[in-house]
Image (tube, rainbow over all chains, first blue to last red; front, side, top):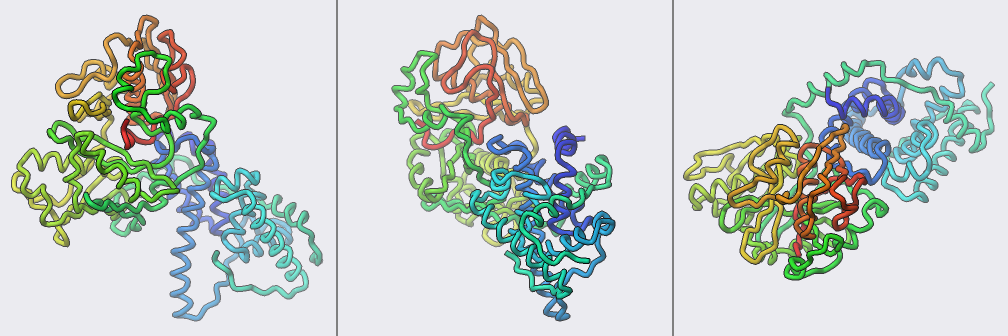
Length: 178
Length: 364
């Protein structure tokens, strides 16, 4: 087994997987994407110049992989919607890790879907992965102030969604992609 | 009952309580899948990168996926940036004999992004990788314009890239398209060899493993001596770097060996014994006591009786070692021993990250 893979797996695998899972909301898809991350990383490892931390470097590659996935999915979705005029609502059953949690957590999981991709990136990195604002900025290639603004908007959106869900007036807004 | 009012702190706290989600597959299973998916697939996505080269107007667009930029860490290489900014004439540089001077111009690019082209020298002895730093502020076009004249001064032959378009087609596969008037079609067997070696070197630095040739829109190239060629594979190599001066009076450049070495020790040995057109990059007066590897780090220890009298050659020796280490996939090199604490910008007993690219233009 490749020693680079071995080391990266031990140090970061579950973190990368979890990040991708919360981004794409599908375990099987996250499994495929995490493999894609490794393939990119193994190819580019000699170009990693230690100017960022290894962790944020890996997460930034995972981010690119996730965004690529969304782009492909978006064009696929657009075609499907044209063909069947279907809504984009995620009606899939909750993953078991989420389904066994209390209702508020389940609701939050559903609400996360209604954030923009940028908002979701920030929320997942900051609060689920526990990165600092600086690390999040490094991962996303953004300024810290952009991270903070996006974080603020994301929290506001999530708050609004959670409150609407409580009123029973849950509705699925059209998801802005960017 | 559902909570009907939330504040942002509560939302944050709820997010922090989201469950950990784990990949249940074993490490071995994942590794196997990665190795299996490494096989080329016809449906692989086209890499959004195009490199197009012409002698008069070199035009290059590189997709972010190939050269993702990251902020420079000025703390790590403080001397490098000042050193590289410093303008020095080649003559003056030759006269610099003190080992503690920091004014020798570098033969490696230590940070930032670059496009590397393999170009043969005018006497067709070697293919030399030269790199053009890609800076955010100026377009690559402008930078290329600025260095064009220098290729000739260096004794390099840029005609092989005239009108050639290099495009990423699939993962690790690049398409090289030639105009039907390209000089390689009437250049004799040495010319053909040099051209193919240039393409090999250029694609190697782009991370490619195979090349598809086209003559305009037709698949393949018909070379009078080599024959019909549709594709070449770029074989993985671990090379050593030597000194080479393509033209009398021109600056010395670092060139990779044609040969691949099984171990870094063997590569370093060859750097002391190189002959023919190339000069040894490790001087006779320098002795390597030991070479140790720790994962992706290399530690090179010099013997106490090693002499580093010539500042320029000593610095370029270290740069040749750094590039050789990069060939062997090391990420950093630490120099120890030899009774010195630094040569040029390279400090002893500190991890030095391997360079981004060799021979950055302009070479001074």
